[in-house]
Length: 175
Image 1 (cartoon, rainbow, N blue to C red):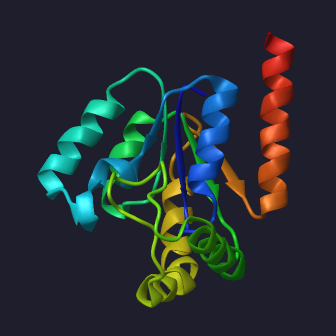
Image 2 (cartoon, rainbow, N blue to C red):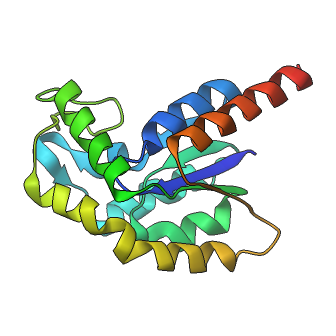
Image 3 (spheres, rainbow, N blue to C red):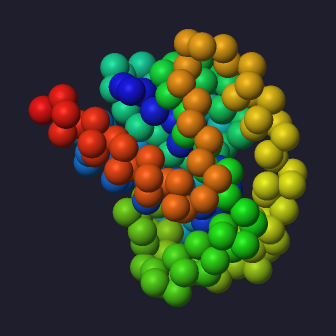
């Protein structure tokens, strides 16, 4: 696992998992939201974002977290591992609400500078419908990858924790 892509619904814990994996595996971490967003929630153009993303993808080792569905095929071309957080809508809604409560008015480290956490009912509606709207497409993409790319589908936070424990055990055995 040298180039890991983490995808899943907002609120599923992609960034949290990415940070933990980055620390355990000593891999550079790229948050797509941090690349995309600038001060006051102004985003880059598609071209600027794609240029920055390609620069990251060309590097030999990384973890990249985030959806940005338009770029998933490009990222799949470069990765060796995909982790899909296939969590329930209630788990993800709860994750978003906890994140807002904890970080309201502050900019998270996985976001662009000057993009403070806020409560956004439209975003909650997006999260509510994310799994229903995107899951089948994501599963088709992942099922069509073949054996070249390792695919890990995690269905719950408990499975995510077990996965991390397994990574930790593997790292200790190697060291």
